[in-house]
Image (cartoon, rainbow, N blue to C red; front, side):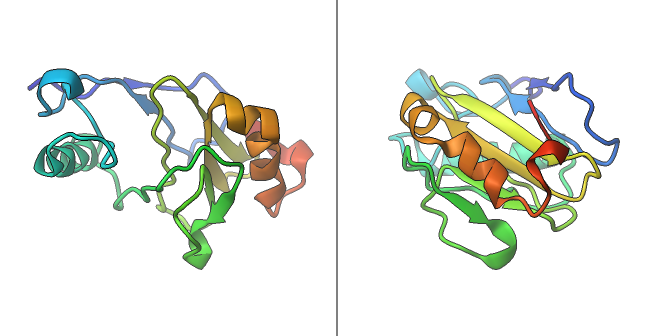
Amino acid sequence: MSKLEVILPDWNAPDTIYAGCTTRSGGVSQRGYASLNLASHVEDDTLNVQRNRELLQQQLALPAVPQWLDQTHSTSVTNLDQQSSRNTDAAITSTPSCIAVVLTADCLPVLFTNIQGTEVGAAHAGWRGLLNGVLENTVQAFASPAEQIIAW
């Protein structure tokens, strides 16, 4: 098992915002799911997925447990501060140390923050979601005006 690989965004986010995108390296999953599979909805061994999620939290020294979604290829957005449904493709939060995450394979992760660094969001942008407005819905879910939101 190797160390996790994380792609860090090149954006003008405030210093208080930590964002990244993992690669598949650094986990314990085997065969077609090797190695860092974080998805519980595929046929990977659930113990491997759980261990991969623990490795993510430990190796990146995350201050809290990531808030995993049950992604549906939709345009819905959940506010993690309100404990809304997890059957969604995007999440926002204004709670410090709350970790909004999305899983992607052949889709795009899109990360958001307001320029003050008091709100963050993550969207799973597949072709259906992009076509039907998942990014627009994510921006609209922020309390901040759209012109104060940046994305990567």
